[in-house]
Length: 93
Image 1 (cartoon, rainbow, N blue to C red):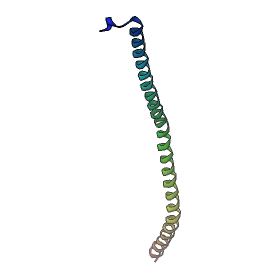
Image 2: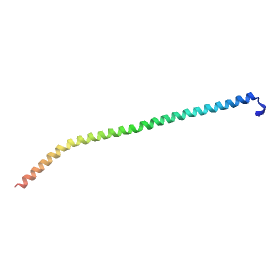
Image 3: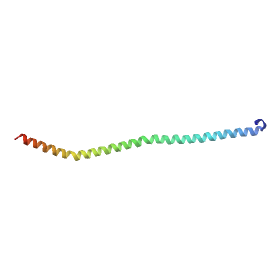
Image 4: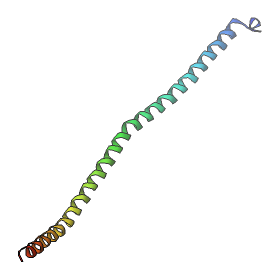
């Protein structure tokens, strides 16, 4: 079948096939480059998002701890002072 075609036609068909393969390969390469770029951005941004969330959670925990300590400490101090003075009063009798 190819022997019946002119050399010009055979060359044009072969060049068209090569160009089509190059276009397909180029399109696939651009698709993969876009995919790799999006994955790279996601890998870069994700640890910082997690680190920021952990930092915020730690700060909130420390704030709660400080406020609870401030709220409970005076009550414990008053209770221990009154308990100590009651024990002292009973031991001196």
